[in-house]
Amino acid sequence: MRRELEESLCEEFPNLFRQYSYRKSSYYTLFIACGDGWEPIIRRLSERITKIVETIVEQHTDPTDTEISEETEDRKRAEGGPRIRFTRRDFRFMYIKEKYGMLHLSLSQRTPELEEAMNDARQESGCTCESCGRPGTFGGHSWLGVFCGHHGFDDRRILNF
Ligand SMILES: [Zn+2]
Image 1: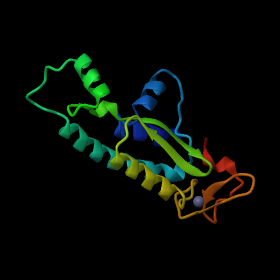
Image 2: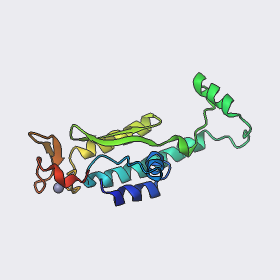
Image 3: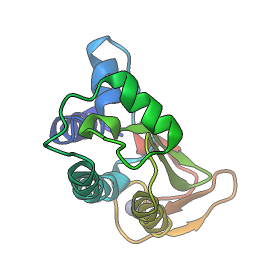
């Protein structure tokens, strides 16, 4: 994906893309390994995840109980206790890439709602041209992918990564 698009995602969703921002500052390029056409899918997914995360963070924040130590939190987490507290920083993308022609993503935390959001994005990538974002179909010979009639299955050079 083009660097400007990656940077704009990092700026808009600093927690979700923390891993990317961090690497950028230390001169590593951990790019979002898919074509520009999937950027709107990733952006919409990031907005949806942000909303879900807000509900999780609220649900687990007890304003009367601010003195819990990290150690206690870790223990409660391990025990699966009801007072697990998450912060927004606990939720970040571990990777975003194209694999076997589909969008593959991993988040640092899982809940059924987050899984559903990720699955929807994946499904959407299955009918969206990876190059330009127009409706596309899955296919190819030497290279499997989703492309529209305008962008060929075998011309990987258009994808900017
Ligand atoms: Zn296209």
